[in-house]
Length: 479
Image (cartoon, rainbow, N blue to C red; front, side, top):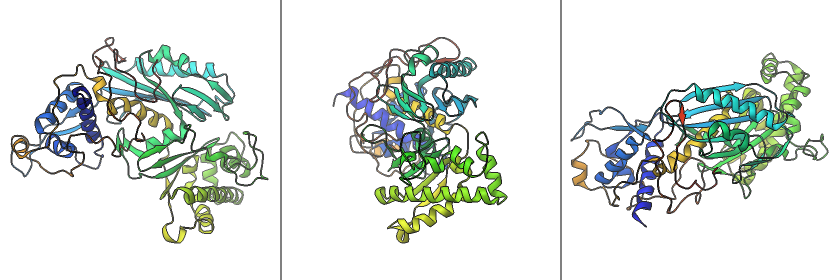
């Protein structure tokens, strides 16, 4: 491996270790980082210094430890430096959200519009106005790492196109030309399915930091019903990137006609409009109105949600029998009424799951909030920085030599020790679990693109887009 590629790999290794320390854990120190990454202290120190200078990592004030040597220097993701732009188009919602590397939401704009059936260009231009407003109001010095758009439908992630979104009434759409004038032509732009991106926000406590559920199926209920599958911390997308269309799995072949052209789809039992109709509520009623009627024990509402729970349990039993997932997560509308769905789901699974007496899956309710997919989209946009930090540094610097952490290096630096032996002897562990949704093979191996002068460019004030960067990561759309 050439020195440039080795340095890039080690920079990524260090960045991922720092970002992976959760909110409940103490931040990792320089000394422990070198041990976990299995790098010499001198190599680790030089790389950390470069990442701090490049505003990807941040060093906290030193803290005293019980061990010998100097106080430990905790490392955390940098705040107020790089930002990811998450965009969401839903049925009845437009959202734009800016998140920094620490996971803080710096700005957002929400509009409970009703784009279903509306002309796509009009909706996208309005979303562009929302984006411009939040970018113009931000403090100077922020760098836009990328933008990801969430849509409720099938997408071509590599070409950045929406293929079909039945509940919006849109087909074969390239959204980028409508957004490029706002986000800039040199900013990485991705498009993703709303359920997958909402699951990303649940799977990570902040960008790059795995949450408590490495394997689960996430069901997102709104007008339609979508799902996302997470296996061992990775997003499972299928051969074409279309895995998770659970709303069009069949509950009853003789059931009501679905807008997809089939009959008896799960969406016809669990989608918002179907639920409201079954509960005797008008189509414009909110899911919270249905929740209130459930709390008061109104018979029609209880019966409607009980039937929906049994339909969910039937379909989810097939998913669990196939994939052996330990956790089922309900999000969106389903989380709002989730306590009333647990019983019928569990009852249905008792009759359909072979493994139910041995290990019944846990039903978890996702956080109830607005535009969860926009948060996941912003997290994905920040992957450009976390997984390819070398692209964002000013220069390659001196080549780094691989090597083990030795006792001499340990005694000359901080006082804290320890480590779990993660990583290999050369300081490269390319195939371990990233916990960020990227499957193995997605950007692994040597990178032949050099780092550009990314961080310093751009006009004064507002959010700056990086310039002169290296090649785009696999699967992104580079414009």
